[in-house]
Image (cartoon, rainbow, N blue to C red; front, side, top):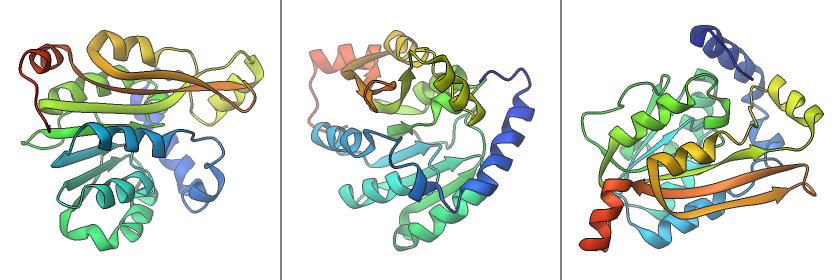
Amino acid sequence: MSLDNPALGRSQIVRYYRLHARIYDLTRWTFLKGREELIRRVAAQCQPRRILEVGCGTGKNLLHLGLLFPEAQLWGLDLSPHMLARASEKLRGLRHRLTLIEAAYDRPVASSQFDLVVFSYALSMFNPGWDAALKTASHDLSPGGVIAVVDFHDSASKMFKQWMGLNHVRLDSHLLPRLEDLLSSWECTVRPACCGLWSYFLFVGRRKDEAMAQQLFPLVNV
């Protein structure tokens, strides 16, 4: 779905999740493939100290990240106050190292940068705004920092694309080429889902200048 008015798009998203926040975790697990695998792959490569999830929703990924990285400070950003309320409840045991922010991701989040920025089925809903979010994430990364993305990729079914558009999701193979343009990846995989009805991708990478420096001067941890 493409929206010419960003403010209109944001208000529609907020209204949408006012209704869906309570049932999100119960109803989306069949669609949102690869979330746990993305986090496992990140954990195998780095030990981030400051983590931001953009479009954190109900906090499922932040909870997983918080358990995997017990020393990390966690930030979660989302447009929906209803989703953030769910996240706050789910993450109550991590509140001493958690910051939740209700905002669009069109400017840096904090004065200090992040070792890991995660997008989990968020960028495909930023229409417009996905490209600005990726550029902001690049600016938000600390030296050697990592961007990790799992999201919808494409579908050969026009009807399925239209139905997903009603749910504010765009499937046009538009995200992965831009990620490959901005970042140097160590993980880039496209996989089929639901007998090939749609595909999703996993991407993990660094800024290209950082990736080159990493090759010359390898680091154990970010």
